[in-house]
Amino acid sequence: MNYNSNYIGKLTEELGRLPGIGSKSAARLAYHIINMPMDQVKNLTDTITQAREKVCLCSECFNLTDREVCPVCADTERDHRQIMVVENPRDLAAYEKTGKYKGVYHVLHGAISPMLGIGPADIKLKELIKRLEGDVDELIIATNSSLEGEATAMYISKLVKPTGIKVSRIATGVPVGGDLEYIDEVTLSRALDGRVTL
Amino acid sequence: MNYNSNYIGKLTEELGRLPGIGSKSAARLAYHIINMPMDQVKNLTDTITQAREKVCLCSECFNLTDREVCPVCADTERDHRQIMVVENPRDLAAYEKTGKYKGVYHVLHGAISPMLGIGPADIKLKELIKRLEGDVDELIIATNSSLEGEATAMYISKLVKPTGIKVSRIATGVPVGGDLEYIDEVTLSRALDGRVTL
Image (cartoon, rainbow over all chains, first blue to last red; front, top):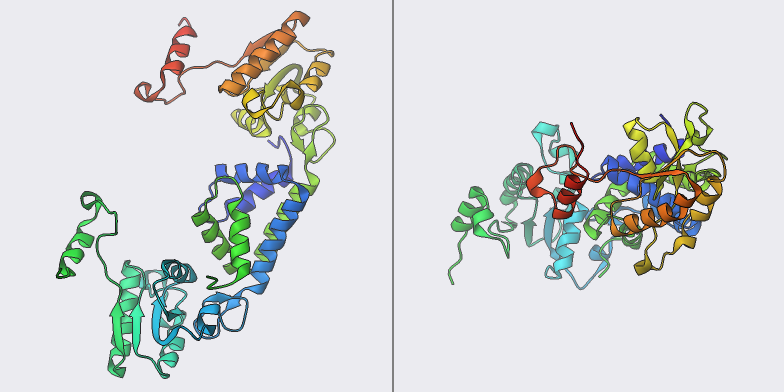
């Protein structure tokens, strides 16, 4: 039965479609939005529309940007001969937050997944190979440590190795602050395999 | 450092202001929205704007509605002589979902809280007292079982009792499916005090 307004029901439904928002959170958000001052609501919707309209992909690395070339690729201080391959712009953001990486990126926008029907042609792989025709010293593969990420890493490494460009993969192991007893067997044995002499 | 677009940063910030959305969820939502088809984004923003613009308070019970009087108050089948007092429209929605209550409501839009500086004049109490001048048999106080909710219940009951109208309070006790060992002492002792003969 409808006990208040269809507008609230519709808003709850729309918000519930967003990832990580269940029906209870959606209802909570809907009631919150209805109680927000009108100018804040306008600000929110304008920001959503603008972000969707203005943000596009960097023509070099396929990072998200509102310019032709993203700030990372446009930065001449960075080492353009070192390319880190990531699955999506969120992974790039995660590495940028470390502030430790001074090379550039290549965003695949996905990973090879036969299960989901995503093949090499469905991600930005052609574009990566094209970039490698330029002056590149090292390709660092930083796809996720999942089945798909590992498969993609393997695929790229096999593809690139014949060109003579150095191909590396970020280390798998125990995360900093991780409690050994809660870490899965695969990670533990990988950490053992990848042990470093002190 | 800005590594993609200010539009994404601004969107993440705006989304992060919503209740229950932390910075990681906000970033995830922002990236999701940027990847959504344009018409879905338009649908989302239109729904937000419409809900905010069209939804107002019912002139009788202060429930949210897009009409002069909300569907509950407009329903002549319901018992208008029985009024349930709730703190906010979400609580009303929760009771409506049970489908068991056939009276009408009064939404206070808050609870008395000296800590937060919310006094009796800041919630819809005057309006409740005014409604009681009409034909009312019973006032069911269904404010939350929190400190503020209990204080508000007490306040209303003291205010209304002299008028001779029956004032009741929803039961406190063990929730259905609740595991006794995880339930706090206050709830357990309230459940004991409120025991019912079988």
